[in-house]
Length: 494
Image 1 (tube, rainbow, N blue to C red):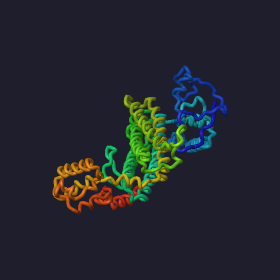
Image 2: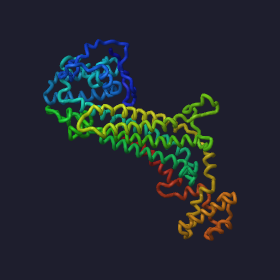
Image 3: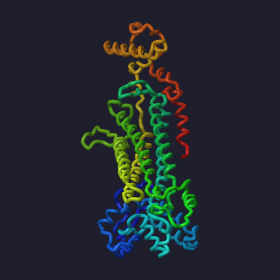
Image 4: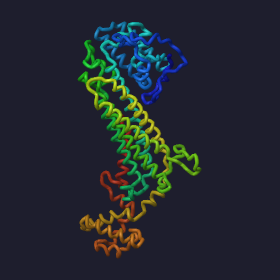
């Protein structure tokens, strides 16, 4: 039985758990005898059907086909340069590989049930197209170095695509910050109102997080971007293959230095999954705030209708499904990181079939983060900020208690004493049902004679904000400067 592959997709468009095999086309499978397998020479008994179904990776690794063909073309050139293939043989194999690529691109590639993985499917089809010559391509190469090459090529593209999606979220946050530069809201610690800050300053905190996420992905890419081809199954190869030439053809700046490590290394997978887990943690924190801020209890913003759903029972409901799902999918990405770490922890050198289990977690994590970033960029752009509600929440005099303590410090009072004295003022306000700003100068001076008439200038939210005029503070001047710098920084090409 055979079928058609899906149309060519980006590295981030996955089909989880579904093989690209359908029953609308039938191609004869000669038999399941061991001699039909590329490795079947030493076997007397055919692989059991249930074992083939259990061990196949084609349902998920088919999406590596473009990278597999890129690697095969480079390997073919290396074989020709080493005089293992003639120039004409190299040209014939290259033409055959390009035809296979076109079939996969067009969705006409005839997958068979006997195909173990995308690598064997491509090799099998190449031999069908050009005859026994196709069998020469695998000279000096193992699936062990072939698979990790494909995965590194895939990740290189995936990281670039993720960075672009991440930049779109950052630019949406920067746009909201710039448009709402004058909006004040309470800053929180322990989810309790603490001090007034600019909304723009709050939003920029997430841009700073995402900038670190980009840096982590770029740093991980330096270790992804090392070429393992030429390592063979584990010990290298007996053929004089020019690994540096292959690396240049595939745009790798370096090659691996130990064949045992090269075929069994999945540190780069763990590293990318770790970076994606931290990125999702940041998205989840932002999601949590969007969920909280859109409640009637906060009312700081409204999520656009197109990103929400209603209740099947309660007509009044508007549910924040997108941020809730992003928050939930964070655990899914964490799980993939733990899955790969656990899979790797007991593996002896060098290659073990366990390593097949690296792809589904990685592919799904990349797809999940990619989709989350894509929808979040659009959501953030369309947020409707309730500036009046935020300002109202920031009007409480208690948010200015630290300002009073700092006022006393500038009068020469030690901070710990100033902190204690203002605490007494807060208690006085609670006893009298007053706001801190409603206390008269005489009432302030009952606690400390250092309070003078100019203390009133300290008791406005905007004054409190603009006094934080050091690098990294919430003062408008600092925030505007940081917005301008980040707008340039985010748009850098990585």
